Image (tube, rainbow, N blue to C red; front, side):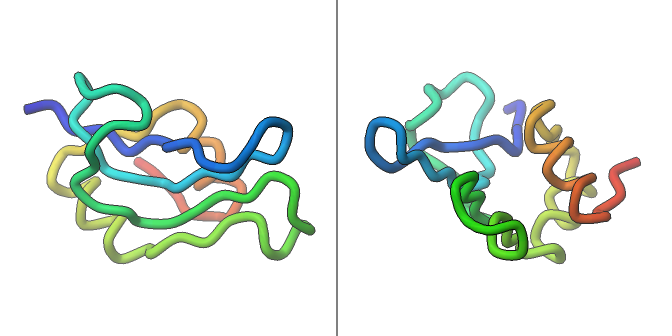
Length: 83
């Protein structure tokens, strides 16, 4: 099973917010998740946009989960280094 860390969309039209989740790579964007590890609110002020459970993300990365390109950029923006 190939596991990815990616975004799951919530909210209404023009008011999106996202949860950062661990899912099987073959499941649909809003499908069943394995674990929720954070959230991303693009409309909020800068300090409240991203919240991540860092130890859970590190644990999943050590287990071999691959972050999507968008999640990789978000994590790098909060100085969470990915090897």
